[in-house]
Length: 396
Picture 1 (cartoon, rainbow, N blue to C red):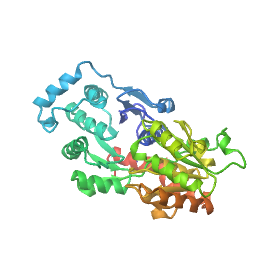
Picture 2: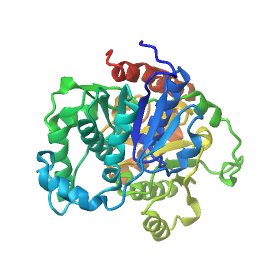
Picture 3: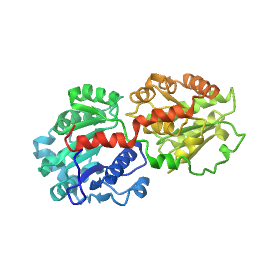
Picture 4: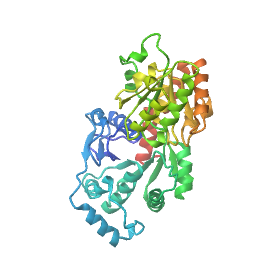
Protein backbone atom coordinates (compact mmCIF):
# COMPACT_ATOMS: atom_id res chain seq x y z
CA UNK A 1 0.00 0.00 0.00
CA UNK A 2 1.09 3.58 -0.69
CA UNK A 3 0.76 5.69 2.45
CA UNK A 4 -0.87 9.12 2.54
CA UNK A 5 -0.95 11.82 5.25
CA UNK A 6 -3.30 14.60 6.21
CA UNK A 7 -0.98 17.20 4.69
CA UNK A 8 -1.09 15.69 1.22
CA UNK A 9 -3.71 16.11 -1.51
CA UNK A 10 -6.97 14.33 -0.64
CA UNK A 11 -8.79 11.35 -2.02
CA UNK A 12 -12.19 12.58 -3.23
CA UNK A 13 -15.52 10.76 -3.16
CA UNK A 14 -18.17 12.34 -5.40
CA UNK A 15 -21.88 11.69 -4.72
CA UNK A 16 -25.15 13.36 -5.57
CA UNK A 17 -26.19 13.51 -1.90
CA UNK A 18 -26.31 11.35 1.21
CA UNK A 19 -29.84 10.07 0.64
CA UNK A 20 -30.75 6.85 2.42
CA UNK A 21 -29.68 4.36 -0.23
CA UNK A 22 -27.26 1.46 -0.38
CA UNK A 23 -24.74 3.19 -2.68
CA UNK A 24 -24.52 6.21 -0.37
CA UNK A 25 -24.00 3.99 2.67
CA UNK A 26 -21.27 2.05 0.88
CA UNK A 27 -19.38 5.22 -0.11
CA UNK A 28 -19.65 6.54 3.44
CA UNK A 29 -18.24 3.28 4.86
CA UNK A 30 -15.34 3.42 2.42
CA UNK A 31 -14.57 7.09 3.10
CA UNK A 32 -14.63 6.46 6.85
CA UNK A 33 -12.37 3.39 6.57
CA UNK A 34 -9.73 5.22 4.52
CA UNK A 35 -9.92 8.24 6.83
CA UNK A 36 -9.16 5.98 9.80
CA UNK A 37 -6.02 4.86 7.97
CA UNK A 38 -4.80 8.47 7.89
CA UNK A 39 -5.81 9.48 4.37
CA UNK A 40 -7.22 12.95 3.78
CA UNK A 41 -10.76 12.45 2.48
CA UNK A 42 -13.03 14.95 0.73
CA UNK A 43 -16.68 13.89 0.50
CA UNK A 44 -17.86 15.97 -2.47
CA UNK A 45 -21.65 16.38 -2.70
CA UNK A 46 -23.89 17.94 -5.34
CA UNK A 47 -26.30 18.76 -2.51
CA UNK A 48 -25.95 18.61 1.27
CA UNK A 49 -29.02 16.54 2.05
CA UNK A 50 -29.97 13.06 3.19
CA UNK A 51 -30.22 11.18 6.49
CA UNK A 52 -26.62 9.96 6.33
CA UNK A 53 -25.23 13.48 6.73
CA UNK A 54 -25.24 13.01 10.48
CA UNK A 55 -23.11 9.86 10.14
CA UNK A 56 -20.13 11.47 8.37
CA UNK A 57 -17.03 11.15 10.60
CA UNK A 58 -15.53 14.42 11.81
CA UNK A 59 -12.23 13.63 10.05
CA UNK A 60 -13.96 13.49 6.65
CA UNK A 61 -14.15 16.91 4.96
CA UNK A 62 -17.55 17.62 3.38
CA UNK A 63 -17.42 19.73 0.20
CA UNK A 64 -20.77 21.00 -1.08
CA UNK A 65 -20.67 22.13 -4.69
CA UNK A 66 -22.39 25.48 -5.09
CA UNK A 67 -24.59 25.67 -8.16
CA UNK A 68 -24.39 28.99 -10.03
CA UNK A 69 -27.62 30.68 -11.23
CA UNK A 70 -28.77 30.56 -14.84
CA UNK A 71 -26.66 27.50 -15.53
CA UNK A 72 -29.39 25.85 -17.60
CA UNK A 73 -28.93 28.42 -20.40
CA UNK A 74 -25.16 28.03 -20.24
CA UNK A 75 -25.58 24.26 -20.45
CA UNK A 76 -27.68 24.52 -23.60
CA UNK A 77 -25.13 26.82 -25.18
CA UNK A 78 -22.33 24.42 -24.25
CA UNK A 79 -24.15 21.49 -25.82
CA UNK A 80 -24.65 23.47 -29.04
CA UNK A 81 -20.98 24.43 -29.35
CA UNK A 82 -18.92 21.60 -27.85
CA UNK A 83 -18.14 18.40 -29.72
CA UNK A 84 -18.29 16.53 -26.39
CA UNK A 85 -22.06 17.06 -26.22
CA UNK A 86 -23.23 16.49 -29.79
CA UNK A 87 -25.08 13.34 -28.79
CA UNK A 88 -27.22 15.15 -26.19
CA UNK A 89 -30.78 15.67 -27.46
CA UNK A 90 -32.12 19.24 -27.45
CA UNK A 91 -34.94 18.34 -25.07
CA UNK A 92 -32.49 17.12 -22.40
CA UNK A 93 -33.29 18.66 -19.02
CA UNK A 94 -30.60 19.77 -16.59
CA UNK A 95 -30.37 17.42 -13.59
CA UNK A 96 -29.08 18.75 -10.29
CA UNK A 97 -25.88 16.75 -10.64
CA UNK A 98 -25.06 18.49 -13.96
CA UNK A 99 -25.80 21.91 -12.49
CA UNK A 100 -22.80 21.44 -10.23
CA UNK A 101 -20.41 20.76 -13.14
CA UNK A 102 -18.65 24.17 -13.04
CA UNK A 103 -18.24 23.93 -9.27
CA UNK A 104 -16.72 20.45 -9.59
CA UNK A 105 -14.30 21.74 -12.24
CA UNK A 106 -13.25 24.52 -9.84
CA UNK A 107 -12.84 22.02 -7.00
CA UNK A 108 -10.56 19.78 -9.08
CA UNK A 109 -8.44 22.73 -10.19
CA UNK A 110 -8.17 24.12 -6.65
CA UNK A 111 -7.66 20.99 -4.55
CA UNK A 112 -6.07 18.68 -7.14
CA UNK A 113 -7.06 15.45 -5.35
CA UNK A 114 -4.87 12.42 -5.91
CA UNK A 115 -7.89 10.56 -7.20
CA UNK A 116 -11.66 10.82 -7.29
CA UNK A 117 -14.16 7.98 -6.94
CA UNK A 118 -17.63 8.72 -8.30
CA UNK A 119 -20.72 6.56 -7.87
CA UNK A 120 -23.95 6.74 -9.86
CA UNK A 121 -24.70 7.03 -13.58
CA UNK A 122 -25.25 10.79 -13.57
CA UNK A 123 -22.43 11.70 -11.20
CA UNK A 124 -20.09 9.40 -13.11
CA UNK A 125 -20.75 11.32 -16.31
CA UNK A 126 -20.37 14.68 -14.58
CA UNK A 127 -17.10 13.52 -13.03
CA UNK A 128 -15.78 12.55 -16.46
CA UNK A 129 -16.68 15.90 -17.99
CA UNK A 130 -15.34 17.86 -15.01
CA UNK A 131 -12.01 16.05 -15.07
CA UNK A 132 -11.69 16.69 -18.82
CA UNK A 133 -12.39 20.43 -18.42
CA UNK A 134 -10.24 20.79 -15.29
CA UNK A 135 -7.18 19.06 -16.69
CA UNK A 136 -4.57 18.09 -14.13
CA UNK A 137 -3.43 14.71 -12.94
CA UNK A 138 -6.37 13.60 -10.76
CA UNK A 139 -7.00 9.90 -11.25
CA UNK A 140 -10.68 9.15 -11.94
CA UNK A 141 -12.35 5.91 -10.91
CA UNK A 142 -16.02 5.21 -11.66
CA UNK A 143 -18.05 2.95 -9.39
CA UNK A 144 -20.96 1.13 -11.05
CA UNK A 145 -23.57 -0.06 -8.57
CA UNK A 146 -26.17 -1.16 -11.12
CA UNK A 147 -26.86 -0.68 -14.80
CA UNK A 148 -30.09 -2.47 -15.73
CA UNK A 149 -31.86 -0.18 -18.22
CA UNK A 150 -34.93 -2.29 -19.04
CA UNK A 151 -37.53 -1.46 -20.19
CA UNK A 152 -35.63 0.50 -22.86
CA UNK A 153 -37.28 3.92 -22.52
CA UNK A 154 -36.04 6.94 -24.48
CA UNK A 155 -34.39 8.29 -21.33
CA UNK A 156 -32.59 5.02 -20.64
CA UNK A 157 -31.43 4.62 -24.24
CA UNK A 158 -30.03 8.14 -24.09
CA UNK A 159 -28.24 7.35 -20.82
CA UNK A 160 -26.68 4.27 -22.40
CA UNK A 161 -25.44 6.37 -25.33
CA UNK A 162 -23.74 8.69 -22.86
CA UNK A 163 -22.18 5.76 -21.01
CA UNK A 164 -20.87 4.26 -24.25
CA UNK A 165 -19.44 7.61 -25.35
CA UNK A 166 -17.79 8.83 -22.16
CA UNK A 167 -17.03 5.92 -19.79
CA UNK A 168 -13.83 5.01 -21.71
CA UNK A 169 -12.37 8.32 -20.43
CA UNK A 170 -12.12 6.87 -16.90
CA UNK A 171 -8.82 5.57 -15.57
CA UNK A 172 -10.57 2.59 -13.97
CA UNK A 173 -14.06 1.15 -13.77
CA UNK A 174 -15.17 -0.72 -10.64
CA UNK A 175 -18.32 -2.85 -10.57
CA UNK A 176 -19.83 -4.04 -7.30
CA UNK A 177 -20.51 -7.54 -8.63
CA UNK A 178 -19.49 -9.76 -11.51
CA UNK A 179 -23.04 -9.49 -12.82
CA UNK A 180 -22.83 -5.71 -13.03
CA UNK A 181 -19.38 -5.95 -14.61
CA UNK A 182 -20.64 -8.36 -17.27
CA UNK A 183 -23.67 -6.18 -18.06
CA UNK A 184 -21.58 -3.00 -18.23
CA UNK A 185 -19.19 -4.69 -20.64
CA UNK A 186 -21.96 -5.90 -22.95
CA UNK A 187 -24.21 -2.83 -22.86
CA UNK A 188 -21.49 -0.18 -22.94
CA UNK A 189 -19.11 -2.00 -25.27
CA UNK A 190 -16.26 -1.83 -22.73
CA UNK A 191 -13.75 -4.70 -22.70
CA UNK A 192 -14.49 -6.92 -19.71
CA UNK A 193 -10.85 -6.92 -18.63
CA UNK A 194 -11.06 -3.15 -18.08
CA UNK A 195 -13.70 -3.61 -15.37
CA UNK A 196 -12.65 -4.56 -11.85
CA UNK A 197 -15.06 -6.26 -9.45
CA UNK A 198 -14.86 -5.16 -5.82
CA UNK A 199 -17.60 -6.26 -3.46
CA UNK A 200 -19.14 -3.49 -1.40
CA UNK A 201 -17.70 -2.57 2.02
CA UNK A 202 -20.74 -3.51 4.07
CA UNK A 203 -19.77 -5.31 7.27
CA UNK A 204 -18.34 -2.85 9.81
CA UNK A 205 -17.71 -2.68 13.53
CA UNK A 206 -20.48 -0.08 13.71
CA UNK A 207 -22.94 -2.51 12.13
CA UNK A 208 -22.09 -5.15 14.72
CA UNK A 209 -22.61 -2.63 17.51
CA UNK A 210 -25.85 -1.27 16.06
CA UNK A 211 -27.43 -4.71 15.71
CA UNK A 212 -27.11 -5.10 19.49
CA UNK A 213 -28.89 -1.82 20.20
CA UNK A 214 -32.17 -2.04 22.18
CA UNK A 215 -35.32 -2.29 20.11
CA UNK A 216 -38.71 -1.38 21.49
CA UNK A 217 -41.35 -2.66 19.10
CA UNK A 218 -44.43 -4.63 20.17
CA UNK A 219 -44.11 -7.07 17.28
CA UNK A 220 -40.87 -8.46 18.76
CA UNK A 221 -42.36 -9.27 22.15
CA UNK A 222 -41.94 -12.90 23.31
CA UNK A 223 -44.61 -15.17 21.90
CA UNK A 224 -45.44 -12.86 18.97
CA UNK A 225 -45.74 -14.20 15.40
CA UNK A 226 -42.53 -14.30 13.34
CA UNK A 227 -41.58 -10.96 11.78
CA UNK A 228 -40.44 -10.81 8.17
CA UNK A 229 -38.39 -7.79 7.15
CA UNK A 230 -38.05 -5.81 3.94
CA UNK A 231 -35.73 -2.80 3.69
CA UNK A 232 -35.35 -0.25 0.92
CA UNK A 233 -36.82 2.73 -0.83
CA UNK A 234 -40.50 2.31 -1.68
CA UNK A 235 -39.87 2.28 -5.41
CA UNK A 236 -40.80 0.09 -8.37
CA UNK A 237 -37.56 -1.88 -8.67
CA UNK A 238 -37.80 -3.11 -5.06
CA UNK A 239 -41.11 -4.82 -5.99
CA UNK A 240 -42.60 -4.75 -2.51
CA UNK A 241 -46.07 -5.57 -3.97
CA UNK A 242 -44.82 -9.09 -4.71
CA UNK A 243 -43.54 -9.36 -1.13
CA UNK A 244 -46.90 -8.28 0.31
CA UNK A 245 -48.71 -10.78 -1.93
CA UNK A 246 -46.34 -13.54 -0.79
CA UNK A 247 -46.96 -12.65 2.87
CA UNK A 248 -50.71 -12.86 2.27
CA UNK A 249 -50.18 -16.41 1.00
CA UNK A 250 -47.98 -17.31 3.98
CA UNK A 251 -50.62 -16.00 6.41
CA UNK A 252 -53.10 -18.46 4.96
CA UNK A 253 -50.83 -21.20 6.35
CA UNK A 254 -49.45 -19.69 9.57
CA UNK A 255 -49.35 -16.37 11.48
CA UNK A 256 -46.64 -13.97 10.28
CA UNK A 257 -46.04 -10.22 10.18
CA UNK A 258 -44.19 -7.99 7.71
CA UNK A 259 -42.21 -4.80 8.39
CA UNK A 260 -40.97 -2.78 5.41
CA UNK A 261 -38.42 -0.15 6.47
CA UNK A 262 -38.03 2.68 3.99
CA UNK A 263 -39.78 5.61 2.38
CA UNK A 264 -40.72 6.47 -1.18
CA UNK A 265 -43.30 7.28 -3.82
CA UNK A 266 -44.98 3.84 -3.72
CA UNK A 267 -46.19 4.12 -0.11
CA UNK A 268 -49.85 4.73 -0.95
CA UNK A 269 -49.85 1.93 -3.53
CA UNK A 270 -48.44 -0.55 -1.00
CA UNK A 271 -50.89 0.49 1.72
CA UNK A 272 -53.77 0.11 -0.73
CA UNK A 273 -52.59 -3.37 -1.74
CA UNK A 274 -52.27 -4.50 1.90
CA UNK A 275 -55.83 -3.32 2.53
CA UNK A 276 -57.12 -5.07 -0.59
CA UNK A 277 -55.49 -8.35 0.47
CA UNK A 278 -56.80 -8.04 4.02
CA UNK A 279 -53.37 -7.96 5.67
CA UNK A 280 -53.29 -4.36 6.91
CA UNK A 281 -53.09 -5.44 10.56
CA UNK A 282 -49.98 -7.51 9.89
CA UNK A 283 -48.11 -5.26 7.43
CA UNK A 284 -46.41 -2.09 8.70
CA UNK A 285 -44.48 0.62 6.84
CA UNK A 286 -42.83 2.75 9.55
CA UNK A 287 -40.68 4.74 7.08
CA UNK A 288 -36.92 5.25 6.99
CA UNK A 289 -35.12 3.83 10.02
CA UNK A 290 -31.57 4.95 10.81
CA UNK A 291 -30.68 1.62 12.43
CA UNK A 292 -32.27 -1.27 10.52
CA UNK A 293 -29.70 -3.69 11.96
CA UNK A 294 -31.45 -3.94 15.31
CA UNK A 295 -34.50 -5.17 13.38
CA UNK A 296 -32.43 -7.59 11.25
CA UNK A 297 -30.88 -9.16 14.37
CA UNK A 298 -34.33 -9.92 15.77
CA UNK A 299 -36.40 -10.68 12.65
CA UNK A 300 -37.26 -14.25 11.72
CA UNK A 301 -36.23 -13.51 8.13
CA UNK A 302 -35.13 -10.83 5.69
CA UNK A 303 -36.75 -10.95 2.24
CA UNK A 304 -35.38 -9.23 -0.88
CA UNK A 305 -38.03 -8.96 -3.59
CA UNK A 306 -36.18 -6.71 -6.06
CA UNK A 307 -36.56 -6.76 -9.84
CA UNK A 308 -32.91 -5.81 -10.25
CA UNK A 309 -29.95 -4.78 -8.11
CA UNK A 310 -26.21 -4.26 -8.43
CA UNK A 311 -25.01 -5.87 -5.23
CA UNK A 312 -27.84 -5.54 -2.68
CA UNK A 313 -26.24 -4.13 0.46
CA UNK A 314 -29.23 -4.95 2.64
CA UNK A 315 -28.94 -8.65 1.82
CA UNK A 316 -25.34 -8.67 3.05
CA UNK A 317 -26.28 -6.66 6.14
CA UNK A 318 -28.98 -9.19 6.99
CA UNK A 319 -26.47 -12.04 6.76
CA UNK A 320 -24.05 -10.09 8.95
CA UNK A 321 -26.79 -9.80 11.56
CA UNK A 322 -27.35 -13.56 11.39
CA UNK A 323 -30.81 -13.10 9.88
CA UNK A 324 -32.07 -15.91 7.59
CA UNK A 325 -32.75 -14.64 4.07
CA UNK A 326 -34.84 -15.31 1.00
CA UNK A 327 -34.21 -13.42 -2.23
CA UNK A 328 -35.31 -13.09 -5.81
CA UNK A 329 -32.70 -14.32 -8.26
CA UNK A 330 -32.57 -10.89 -9.86
CA UNK A 331 -29.74 -9.44 -11.88
CA UNK A 332 -27.41 -9.02 -10.23
CA UNK A 333 -25.81 -9.84 -6.91
CA UNK A 334 -28.09 -12.14 -4.89
CA UNK A 335 -26.79 -15.32 -6.51
CA UNK A 336 -23.20 -14.20 -5.87
CA UNK A 337 -23.92 -13.23 -2.26
CA UNK A 338 -25.83 -16.42 -1.47
CA UNK A 339 -23.49 -18.71 -3.46
CA UNK A 340 -26.21 -19.89 -5.80
CA UNK A 341 -28.70 -20.53 -2.99
CA UNK A 342 -26.36 -22.13 -0.45
CA UNK A 343 -27.04 -19.44 2.15
CA UNK A 344 -30.68 -18.74 1.31
CA UNK A 345 -33.29 -19.68 -1.31
CA UNK A 346 -33.40 -17.84 -4.64
CA UNK A 347 -36.75 -17.48 -6.42
CA UNK A 348 -37.88 -16.02 -9.77
CA UNK A 349 -38.55 -12.28 -9.93
CA UNK A 350 -42.19 -11.30 -9.50
CA UNK A 351 -43.37 -14.78 -8.46
CA UNK A 352 -45.36 -14.32 -5.24
CA UNK A 353 -46.25 -18.02 -5.02
CA UNK A 354 -42.61 -19.15 -5.23
CA UNK A 355 -41.59 -16.46 -2.75
CA UNK A 356 -44.23 -17.69 -0.29
CA UNK A 357 -43.04 -21.28 -0.59
CA UNK A 358 -39.43 -20.21 0.06
CA UNK A 359 -40.46 -18.13 3.07
CA UNK A 360 -42.34 -21.06 4.58
CA UNK A 361 -39.40 -23.42 3.99
CA UNK A 362 -36.99 -21.12 5.86
CA UNK A 363 -39.47 -20.51 8.69
CA UNK A 364 -39.80 -24.27 9.11
CA UNK A 365 -36.04 -24.95 8.96
CA UNK A 366 -33.96 -21.81 9.56
CA UNK A 367 -30.19 -22.00 8.96
CA UNK A 368 -27.61 -21.50 11.70
CA UNK A 369 -27.14 -17.78 12.26
CA UNK A 370 -23.37 -18.10 12.78
CA UNK A 371 -23.05 -19.68 9.33
CA UNK A 372 -24.69 -16.61 7.81
CA UNK A 373 -22.38 -14.23 9.71
CA UNK A 374 -19.35 -16.13 8.45
CA UNK A 375 -20.52 -15.74 4.86
CA UNK A 376 -21.02 -11.99 5.36
CA UNK A 377 -17.35 -11.58 6.32
CA UNK A 378 -16.53 -11.81 2.60
CA UNK A 379 -17.98 -8.28 2.35
CA UNK A 380 -16.06 -6.62 5.18
CA UNK A 381 -15.13 -2.94 4.98
CA UNK A 382 -11.42 -3.63 5.54
CA UNK A 383 -11.24 -6.08 2.65
CA UNK A 384 -12.95 -3.60 0.31
CA UNK A 385 -10.83 -0.68 1.57
CA UNK A 386 -7.64 -2.56 0.67
CA UNK A 387 -8.89 -3.21 -2.85
CA UNK A 388 -10.28 0.28 -3.47
CA UNK A 389 -7.11 1.95 -2.18
CA UNK A 390 -5.02 -0.03 -4.66
CA UNK A 391 -7.29 1.16 -7.49
CA UNK A 392 -7.41 4.79 -6.32
CA UNK A 393 -3.62 4.95 -6.07
CA UNK A 394 -3.06 3.06 -9.33
CA UNK A 395 -1.37 0.14 -7.60
CA UNK A 396 -3.68 -2.68 -8.72
